Length: 185
Image 1 (tube, one colour):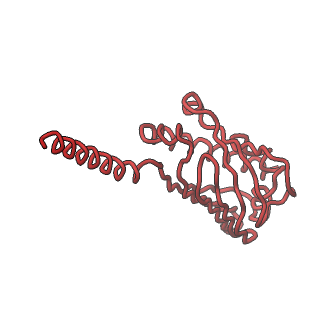
Image 2 (cartoon, helix red, strand yellow; image 1 turned 45 degrees about the vertical axis):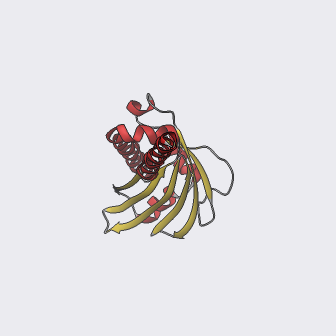
Image 3 (cartoon, rainbow, N blue to C red; image 1 turned 60 degrees about the vertical axis):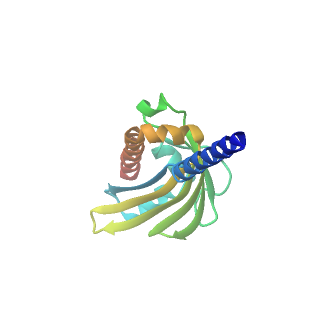
């Protein structure tokens, strides 16, 4: 009888520990990021928009977002898909290799808004908004709502979120600089 009680106690304890760990880990196993970045490009809205929705142009001005597919038309529009190999900041690249994302353009309002569903090592939504700022140029706002799905990158994110933020900011600053130079030509 005593053995059955200890077996039952051990079973209940193990079950409670497992359930507790499942609840704790279930809500925390996937790292979620909600990041906003704004660029100001001193160029007219049509020029900026064309540079951001042309496969050949993106390849020229944003090397960290390496467009690795050659399928589809040059112009990105609703229904277009692109695959990127994202090269992170050097500090992060030592810890993790480039990651891959697949983007499906689901909602396109020319010269106003792009919405992409992102899958791969990151899963979620990227929304890009365009606003002309007088004759001075164009404001581009990026809203990333993504979660990390690559297990290695996910685990690193819990201890290195600041490093990931730095890497994100570095890639975005490189993009802004590259787009400024591209549009100035």
